[in-house]
Amino acid sequence: MTTFWSLWISIITIATFVGIAALLYWCSRDKMGVEEGEDMGHEYDGIREINNPLPKWWSYMFWGTLVFGAVYLVLYPGLGNFKGVLGWTSSDQTVRSMAESQASMERSRQEKTLDQYAKELGDAQARFGETFKALAYDSTGNTLLPITQIAENDEAIKVGQRLFIQNCAQCHGSDARGQAGYPNLTDDAWLYGGEAETIKTTIMNGRIGVMPAWIDSLGEDGVKNVTSYVLSMSGRKVNAQDAAAGKQRFVVCAACHGTDGKGNPAFGAPDLTDNTWLYGGSRRAVEATITHGRQGVMPAWKDVLGEEKVQLISAYVWSLSESNSK
Image (cartoon, rainbow, N blue to C red; front, side, top):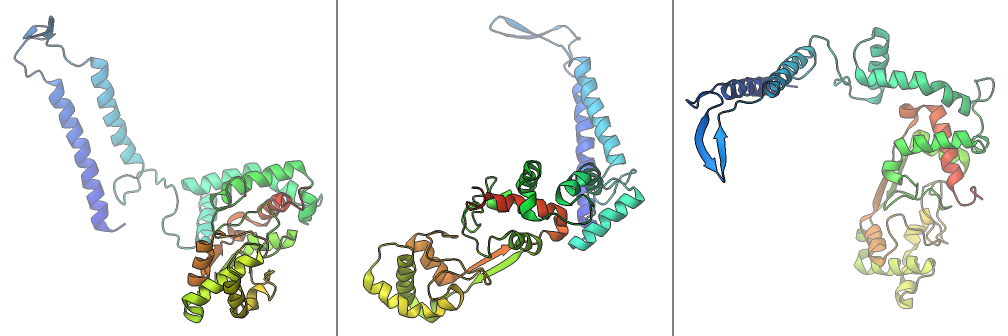
């Protein structure tokens, strides 16, 4: 935080405290010119107004809250760049990469500083680390169990599901059925392959899928025709003449999707014949995909979760597909 913003926040915070204290003091003074408990000379609907001050417990509560806030600001961060007497921090704000974050957390644990984020991660690892290891490794503790074998362990699947909900549900949904742009993980339509080790590779290293824009190469009529042909491949009723023209132009798409439109897991090119659409299967959605292209990014989770957690999530995801859940 720059010096300007540090001063700005500090001044506003201190001014607020001073203002509240002044207001409390002003309200505690009797300025009505009438003795406490005496009639104020006002009446409404038969009710007389009496000069009664705020209850003492109420006033003390306000002053106590103000004092508590002042003590808090002395002990903890709250005044710009001032870190407080205790030096507590929720996280190291200087990190710029995952490697720096991990190094910061390790340093925090070793030096026993008051980095709350590192402390919580350390506590979680101490509490659950052995559980993850016991479910992911064999009896020697040195070799990871096959994903398909882990999938047969109900306890491991429950843990894998919890890890999935914590880390993957934001995109794929808590039921793993995905949404527009994020694959459904419960069917058998896998962009990069649904084998157990392939799923693990995807989670560990991430994926970057690029569908180029074809409007410049095909033109508007070409996009319209290719859209008709692509829709026809999945059994949709389209204009036969447009589809025939689109079939001739589909050659530019065949390099990735194959001449039969069955896709290619090596490129993450989807099967166009199964009526499963990542970005929507309406004519408008398919035209938009061909016209403007698509870019999909699956982040790498290796450094975030570690291999044993990825192994458990992989087992859970593998168990969800239709062919493996039977």
